[in-house]
Length: 263
Image (tube, rainbow, N blue to C red; front, side, top):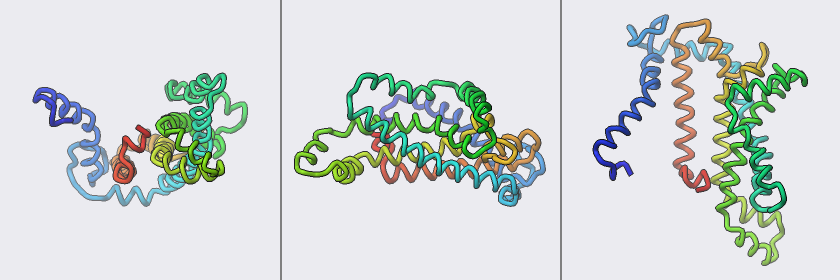
């Protein structure tokens, strides 16, 4: 695709890539700074702040919370979103389009608006600062993505394959296990990866819901930046970027993005 572009267009694309990657190109050198304050370019080099990152009790505890939260939210998002998407794509009934729009409505709302709405509701339900509240808040964000991706994946599955298996005597469970599940697996894995990454990286809504005893890693980093000016946040950022890239590379190598997204 890029090879077919004209030279001026290639230059524009290259400049756009540089613009998008500029913050990362600054953060990576800062993460290897041995200075006590954020200075660019660094005056001394080392892995001081990578060691400090693993020794920081608050960050490590928040990391455990984010990993646990991401895992739980991913499982629940799939349990809710996959059957919902299957029903919306396989069964035609009055209000089907309305339900699809309703379930995916959170995708259209700015995070700050959605976070404020969740705060107002959770205050009445006394869910602020609790693990239950965090899980529900993140489900509101991740489940619409699962429904949207899986709906696209199901729409590309030929229904006559399932019908043929049923006509040959296969039970509904056998049809799902032997036919539907393997065909929808790329979309399923893509939904799981996206749900986990979104839950793990969510900061705006988490700021409205977390409390002093329940803090996710993005919230802990946000509070740390407000009170400190050392390069440890750069080290944490680079570690998170590498972890995210690892997930994307594994997904691309095993499935490919187009196939994983059900296209």
